[in-house]
Length: 138
Image (cartoon, rainbow, N blue to C red; front, side, top):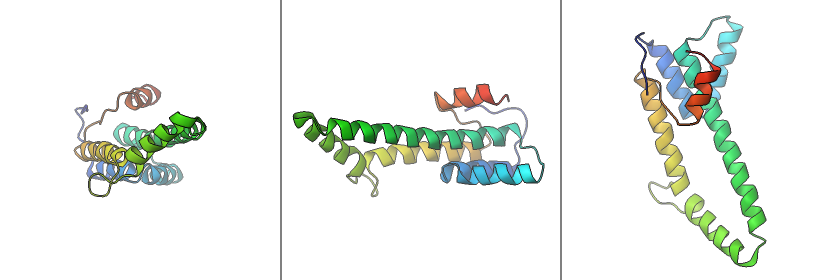
């Protein structure tokens, strides 16, 4: 959650927030549009766009690993029932406004990322921001 001394344009903040809300789809479209138009994205916009894309890939990989592990562990007699109950509670049982516990956590993280990018600040996610910060020099 850093802010540089340069004032961030409103359009860049909107693109960054939309990129988080759409899990990187708006960011990919903006990268393609800026490449075709031969415009260079600002460091703020590129950081947020690439962080949203990396965050969505991270969620996809985490979901894939969890589903494979749940499928493998469901074959074990006692452990399979426990894993299925755990999966049912955390990913499918509505807790708050129709969100499961896992969905609520993701919703809160995406809201944090979108709000701070709308404010013109660099939102920080512990592992992902470090990777993006070292890959794309600001």
